[in-house]
Structures are given as C-alpha cells and as structure tokens.
Image 1 (cartoon, rainbow, N blue to C red):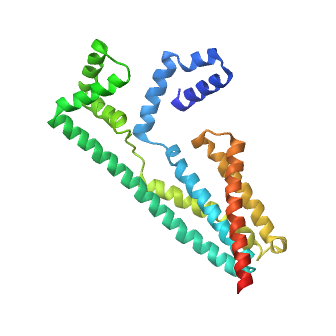
Image 2 (image 1 turned 30 degrees about the horizontal axis):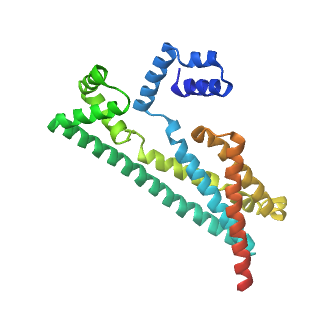
Image 3 (image 1 turned 90 degrees about the vertical axis):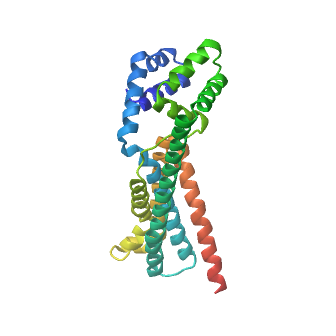
Length: 271
C-alpha cells in the first residue's frame, strides 16, 4: 500500500473517529509495505514530485498574462497590443521563472549535499561528539537509561542511518533527488501552456466573429475557470478542501486582474 493511500485512510478515519479504519491503516503489513514503497519512490523518483512546480508555473502564468490583458483592455488599446505584450510576457516571464526555479532547486540540493558531507566528515573525524549529539537528540525524545544507550548504539552502528538521523533530527534537512532541469521544464511548460488561456479569445477573434464581439468577457470566464481548476489541482499538495482551494486561487487571480484593469484605465485618462 502506498504511504499516501495509508495516510489518507488514517486521515479519513480520524475525521469520522472510525477506529476500525484506523486499525486498517496501522496493520503491520500496511505499515511495512508503505514504508518500503515510500523508500522506492524516493529512490527512483516520480512525476508527482514536480506537481508543485507545475502548479506554481500555472498560477503565475495565468495571473500575470491575465493582468497584462486586463491592463491593456482597461487602457482601451488594440488587440494587437494585447497579443504582443501577452506573448512577450509568456516568453520572458516564463523563462525567468524557469531559470529561477532551476537555480533554487539546484542550490537547495547543493546545500543539502554539502551539509551531508560535513556530517560524514565529523563522524569520521570526531565520532565522540557526534555520538553525544545522537544521545542528546534521543534524550529529548524521552529516551533514558538503557533504552537511550541502546538507541544510540543502534543508530551509530550504521553510518548511513547515523548520517540520515543527524540530517533529519539536527538540521531538519532531507535529501531529495529532484531534478532541477525537470523542475524548471515543468514550471515553464505550465507557465506557457496555461498562461496562453487569457490570450486565446483574442487569437480566435481574428477568425470567429463571436470572439471578436465578446473578447474580454470570454477571456475573463476562461481564465477564472482555469484558475479554479488549477486551485483544485493544488489539493494534492495542500490537502485542503477542493472548493476552498479552487475559489481561493480564482479570487487571487481575479483581484490581480481587477487591479491591473483599474491601473490601465486610470493611466489612459492621463495620456
């Protein structure tokens, strides 16, 4: 059983105070299989770890492009200007976000790797001090006497477990094999593909009369609907209510566009 499924069962059981379902989520078999599966996922990786990058890029792409569209519309400028600025935003801001995310992930991984090497060096060169740190960590967890010394002996008998424990308990750092390149690509792909939504009505207005007559209204509806759906997708990260997450994301995008429209309108009155 995947660990996410087991935790989901446990959460639902807690919400309903269902002891039987709680027991199902805590059988030896369920716990053992979920821990094993979780370790395998961490080792081999998976697309789910890039969901945050995709959602991050999606929201920023939609909101910034919609803000550009709203600002230009508020200023009563032509469709050509909307498309030029909109596509410029998609390319430039998308690349900027992708590069920023790449550097962020890379820097994070390098920092964790450096700290891991430091812990390894300290264990090799001053094991006495590191053993004492392990002892203090488990003492704070409530271990004492023979139980404490037994835990310290077990942990320090395996170098990898020893380092892993120091990384997690002392530094609160967890190694991640997330690819900086894949994270950046997920951000950029989401930014461009979903950031295109506010511009679709304006592109289609060149070919379909209906879109030419109701361009901004269609752009508003399409954008808010997309923001809501991306907000729903966020629940796989935040674990919040799908309705709350969708409405919250839609509201944030709507407020940004409203502010941009207002700025464009007032600036147009001054020129």
